[in-house]
Amino acid sequence: MAPGESADAFKMDLLADHNLPFAIALGAMLLLSLIQIIGVSDLFSADVDADIDAGASFDGSTSLMGGITTLLGIGRVPFLVWLMVFLFLFAAIGLGIQELAENLTGGPLYNWLAALFSAGATLPTTAVLVRPLGRIMPQDETDAVHVETLVGRRAVITIGRAASGSPARARVLDFHGTTHHVMVEPHEAGSEIHEGEEVLLVRREGAVFFGMPLAERRLSPLD
Image 1: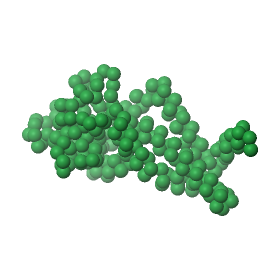
Image 2: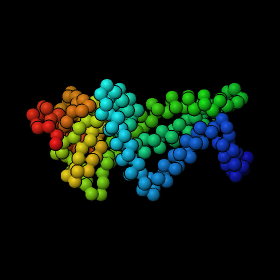
Image 3: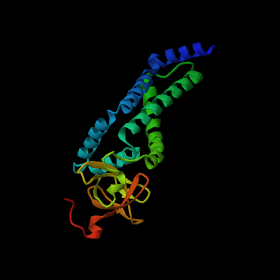
Image 4: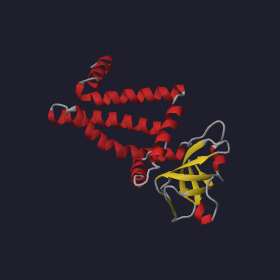
């Protein structure tokens, strides 16, 4: 088959009904990529971060929500980056499942069934892939304030439980009063910091900050 014919066949197969969820996912990923390029993503990400923090403020649901988001890798990278990785993997794994089904049974799975299998495989795969990304990508760094200047500031753990090797999401204000969301681990090995606790950011390595609970330092509450 000629290269042009092969490309046309792929397009037709991608738009087939049994691949519809994966075509939609690829389209959404491309749209988000365009949003990133034209610079609209900062406002969208800020709204998503605000929603996450608001959801974490309800008693009784914070531990469950924090555990789920930490497990899925949400918060280790900007949300749009996490979503783009998820959509790409969802589409790629789903198309692979349909191809495998056709080879084994002579026909594809129902699109909803293939989408269910793909989502089940994509969630843990995304969580694994965003972990190294979170360590090399800058977190919430702006032109106005370099993220390094957040060292020495007080932060509040908003999502997750911070432990050595397992950072949690925290909210911190810079000297302009702008909110930043960063990943925090305890400064002391073997220590843990829980949701709602305040910490003093004492150092930074890559995208991860290290903090000491204010209670341990007997500091006054966060203003």
